[in-house]
Image (cartoon, rainbow over all chains, first blue to last red; front, side, top):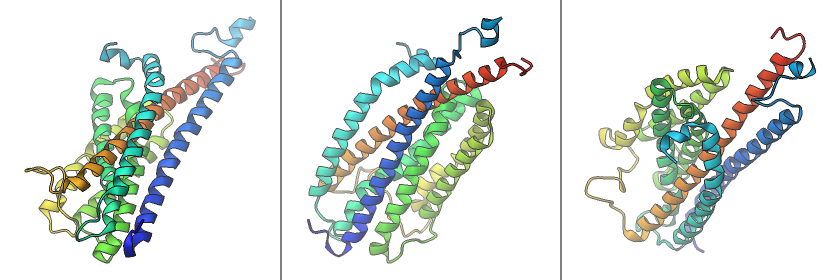
Length: 59
Length: 246
């Protein structure tokens, strides 16, 4: 692999591209995990969109 | 499934779950082929090996503009038709568009230094792309300033439609003004001005970037729908709590 005298510029460009793409993938994956976890926690507490509100359940 | 069925977030979520693995797989394959072709592409007779930067710079630039175009269509969907998924699509496209525009600016700068002798010039093409990046940051900030997603969607939609004026300016800036940036060489009347040995890797990399964008956008839309469900449930929980007055 011989990129000539400008190898550093090419390397930096591809390195930064890799970082940006990796950051986007990580952001989407972590956000999905957070939302799923929060949704599961709320459902565990009995809060669902079609559920009877907790106060009425105990009344 | 009719297209109108996708207006239902639950049906959209089910479709997204089914499509995402296939899109992610297609993206990985396209990148593997694209990078292989990029590695084997010959040096440019004038620019030498730095032409390899083009294989990430150009697709990033296209996606930076495409994302704003998509947000503009979604803004119409929000403001005119009040489509339930339109503002979800617009909101989630903004960070992706900002990331690809940032990548376009950085890789362009790294390409410009050895070819032009400078990282940056305030010429029409570079400045209009920088304006696009700043507008992305503005839209993202606007979304974050309002708690109510539907209010934020309307404000962001208006800003997006106003900002769409910048898209033709970016595209034709190299024709309208005397700039250091080279004129269009792929999407132009009379066909591409690039030899096939460089054009083919570029188009495959562009396909890979488009697939990556679609995968990330679909996944981000799914996350945003889930976030709104969490928000609704938390509001219901707060209203149902003793002493809430509900």
